[in-house]
Image (cartoon, rainbow, N blue to C red; front, side):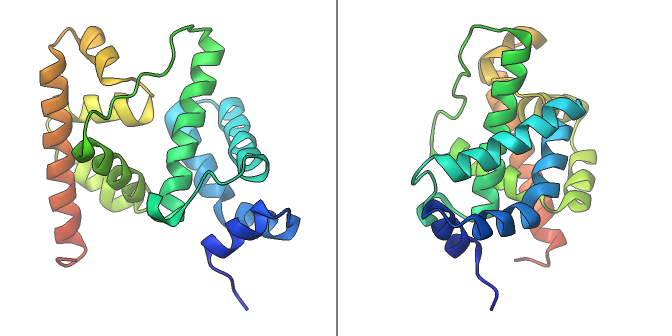
Length: 183
């Protein structure tokens, strides 16, 4: 009998090594490819995979179904892990700045993480964005920059960064809805 992700996660939390192994087998490639895409470094991507699954094993009650789909949540954990590892390697003392000011931004993060699983459609939607929007999405979601860092790096107002992110995600979401046949 095949167990769903939530059951496997619950079993992992209870110390079931086989459940962790099943989750690892199912998600290791996704976590690695997402990590590599963010970091562009094999060593950091491999370390991120280890860290993510170690967190699943050692940290208690970090996932609940209210946080959304398990795979989307797992990629959110992966993203934060990659950002932490990049900053650790760069010896940047500044903490990761939360860039999600409101519910709309929080939902957008969940959307972009879930879309990552559908690579080709996402790449096509990304290709339809303006160059400025592509650059901001790339730096924000794959390079780990915060919106404030993007504002400084690109020498544009923070409000402009936020506006471009919202417009880009809105455009991508509508493109993906069309691709999925209006779902």
